[in-house]
Length: 271
Image 1 (cartoon, rainbow, N blue to C red):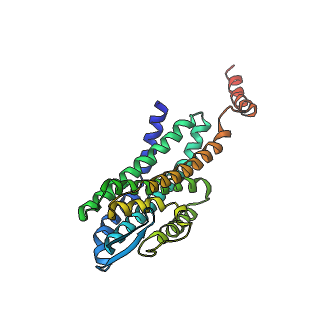
Image 2: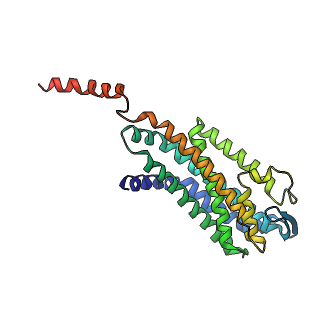
């Protein structure tokens, strides 16, 4: 338990050190929410909510506000976890090479992801409530929370498999746009086909739209988001486990022989 507490504090501190991401979150969310009524024309938009099959009519600025908030939080969470994982990677490998248990490190990373996602979703929901009254505020937070989890886990995966930060930023930006734009009612008010429900942001988008604009909120989209989160997190944790498996000091006879050869001259010099 002590190893987990130390690792959790370290991981949370690494996330907190990213002042650029915190500044962007603090500025972009309120700016977008306050500017949405000025960006979108005061008109009604009729679209079909795919999760329930109902046709809804809502103001374009409210739809745009939800869509923009989702875009901001998913990008920032992916950048935050990607940057933190890349910076902590060499240190984590040195820790495991020195014999630090890997299970507390993995649990600490999951804890930091959950904590950051909850805080980002809460901050975004609070600003939304300051200027608008969605029908189900709790489910709005849940939809934003699952969006943060999905793309936060994606950031962890990319940090383990991509060679540099530039590649990660490009992949995050392109994948988020390809994922979110086709699901926006502003772009696709009457969605069709089987690919939509398979996209990572499908569950979060449907949950947020239903929370803000629909009389009822379905739970199936939440399960879809949690499935994506679990799959991406499992990939990240397995990759971390495999990469650090052969770095334990003394795991092999060669490592023990090398350690003895280093200590032996020192013993002879003391005689």
